[in-house]
Picture 1 (tube, rainbow, N blue to C red):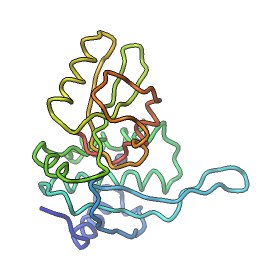
Picture 2 (picture 1 turned 45 degrees about the vertical axis):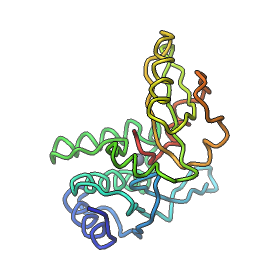
Picture 3 (picture 1 turned 135 degrees about the horizontal axis):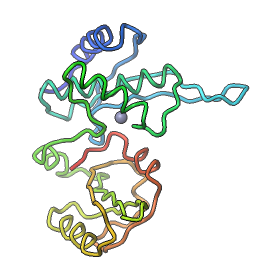
Length: 217
Ligand SMILES: [Zn+2]
């Protein structure tokens, strides 16, 4: 199914009661045509006189480009509601999907039999549909090294070249994992798009931030 505003609103109200003890104030919900995320919780950030960071102007957006089973839509809505809850309460987390986020997510998953996750996965079929003729979309390889460093590389949108990149890096013995994401974040435009066996080092938190809402391939 694809998502509508009415559905998202109805589910928000339902989960607010059931999972968040009706503690979340009403929030604007919009449906767009993004390909880089299934759902996202947006907000503005300001600093108080005393230097405290305050988040405000929360909004939830979902993309009508994705055709997902209803349960995945529900889990996506809950995922964004956790962001809203944390932001609203001004709780400081260790990263976008840090300790606080995961603790709430794990509790909801085990108490209510949900399957909320920290990445929005899409099936290979959906990823293929999304890839076709979409300028500005990039495949971003996220590389974790055995020594704890991490980095990214933009690679061609081509299954065999992606496989060759992953296999090439894994053969080096220095790499722990290579995962691919589909993103239209302009941030990744600065990295050359090639099959070269290179990694541009970035810290994990920055990678997570830039890939917020990206589609895992
Ligand atoms: Zn998230």
